[in-house]
Image: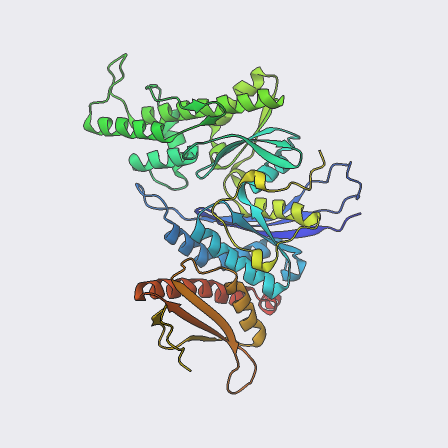
Length: 360
Length: 103
């Protein structure tokens, strides 16, 4: 039997500061049996939101993380009823993400590691999302759609790498939605994408937007530009439905944007599924919380005789537990990151990570 | 001792930043944690060292010397260092092994 292992995970690559503590129960060493489920001992988060009409800037976000990281770790330990000696490894987000916020969390992680005399593992944020999604949903070998404010990738596993099949050529789909929320001055609390989703539910007129799927990839900046144009016309009162002459509302614009970008995501995901011969889709990342994208993906997967797996906001939205989990998977096969290598990097490709803990 | 003037980096702090910590262990922890991040700009040079206090003889003072090509770069770098130092100190204060044990 292996030893039980407990990891502390710290995440801060964007505006969410997350701390999580996870336990991997002991299991027989034979690798053919599925592992028992991981136990989530604590998963807490503190989000920095800019005022409506603005986005979060690296400097302010980093300051927010610096202010809250110590107390969040303390809270997390208290919730898990653990102390420093119970933790086996400290995991932190190495990248990708925003430089200053990443560094503000990494320095806290390093300090803990030195004070508590524990090893560290630097984790790729995208791998964190994927591995947590697999753990929570039990999806065995899905095509993964990773969609957030910072990333948009279609991923499939092969030979110990999560391979990127398709991705955005410019901005992430979540970034497109978030920036449109700024254009409309929609509040950023709890998340701009969430507020756009609520407005979209009340919209029903579908305007024309460029549909920018390019093979396995897609692009969103042109769509955002067109949507911003529409918003300007709407503000002037000149934007009407070409068919009925009805005035277009912000709800209609949100609806139009969501329907268009989500259709694009469904298309590139389906293309990857056809290529790989899979009918399971796992959606991870903040945009994965969106019920409409889950619904549209579900229709497509259903038509192919498959299904969609998604997690709730505890795991979809950036969190510390996914970092703890992915880090612990690496640690369990003997990987650690030396202190001098516990740096951060804004660019860190998903397929750069060797997935040694999978044998399939 | 004032740092010697480096002609390539004419803007130095008039004195070094000395942060007294309770003991050598914590001073060493702070140094090792802070040292990992390289300075972002090639226009800035930073040096960390541990210095003994006069009274105790234990090396419990973290000494940081900054040199830069311009005053602006110096200010930016030192401000950044202070922010990171703040996190290190707060984490030490609230989460050291003995602090947690006492809760």
